[in-house]
Image (cartoon, rainbow, N blue to C red):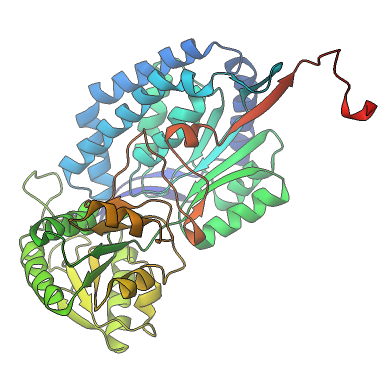
Amino acid sequence: MSAVFQTVNPSTGKEVKSFPFATDKEIREAIDLAHDTFQQWRRRPIAERASLLLKVAGLLMERREQLAQIVTLEIGKPIGEARDEIGLCAMITKYFVDNGEEMLKPKPMEPGSVVISEPLGVIFAIEPWNFPFYQAFRVIAPHILAGNVVILKHAPSCPQSALAIAQLFKDVGMDGVYINVFATVSQAHTIIEDFRVRGVTFTGSELAAAAVAEKAGRHLKKVVLECGGSDPFIILPDAPLPHAIGQARAGRMYNTGQSCTAAKRIIVVGRERGKEFLSGYKDALKEMKAGDPTDGATTLGPVVTERALENLLKQIDDAKSHGAKVVLGGQRIDRPGFYLEPTIITDISAKNPLFHEETFGPVASLYVVDTEEEAIELANATNFGLGASIFSADLEHAQELARRIDSGMVFINSMFYSGPEVPFGGVKNSGIGRELSEFGIGEFVNKKLVRVADHATKSIAQL
């Protein structure tokens, strides 16, 4: 069978290494191993599970540079951001090592009743390429600590990242607790269909999420879905503009704009403020330096594939043909690899396709409105509902407005944030369920009620 899991360096466009699909036999063996391992792993004291995960966190930091270089090679992520991603994975793992037992401890209810948390079993994770370690570890760390085991199908464009993650677990003696598979789409469906797989978590496109959810639903599997976003970034009239401009640049251009929670739709309240913001924002984006992502001086990396670049260019052209204006960028950068100029698009009407689409790259949509009410209405005028940002000098008022935003997360006076201590997830077409924090670790556990009857009390059946 032809190899489709392959490393292509986005900064050069050259193929580096390819890997074959798993065979059907290897998929069956992976499920067998995961199920057999779960029978033993679930019985191990949580302190033992935590001890092994702590070793994984240690290896992440020991191999931080090596792992970051793999991320930069496969994804084109600027090396500083890649190092930060590996550090965040270690932080996530350590957080659940330190706090997981408290989160999972039995919770007394009425006298004689207690709810205990037990693992479900084999969890199948399907994860994307844009944060190849972070996306994996925000699933792996909590659910393995809870006593589950994880089979993970990574994106075809980051196979070496997937293998490096698997090696971490192998090196601390956790074979079978975490299993990487280079599965086809049909093989992924086979894994979901297997009764021994008790939960599915997915991050990716709406279309793929719907297919995964449908398959899981037909087989009565719990699912967690994260399907992208078109996050609004609202700047109120009293917001300090220099801070908002800096956060807008970072919030849109981090990871070359390839983030579900990026500030994709910037909404400025006030016409004059809009002009002032646009001037400062253009200057900020013009300062970005495209180059080799392994060079620490580079601030703009490539997008992940030629196809991704072509899709962005098509979105830009379609937006222009429907009346939008490209006021900065909009062109492919003339150099090897998949580079796009930092782009700002204005005058986007509700009839423009871009109004309803997610742009996964360094493309910012800018809207200027007259009132706060218009800003809230525009922010909610999307099928997505992942995150949002509100900038204001009046924190109390900003928090009131946050309640009116239809999203799973709202960040006041900052770009998006993700840490192990806070939940991650959205509403509407951005997904179902939560990752990270106590909310995330609880997604794939059985909250089992254990009640001791009081013989002096009649049961309902006796009344």
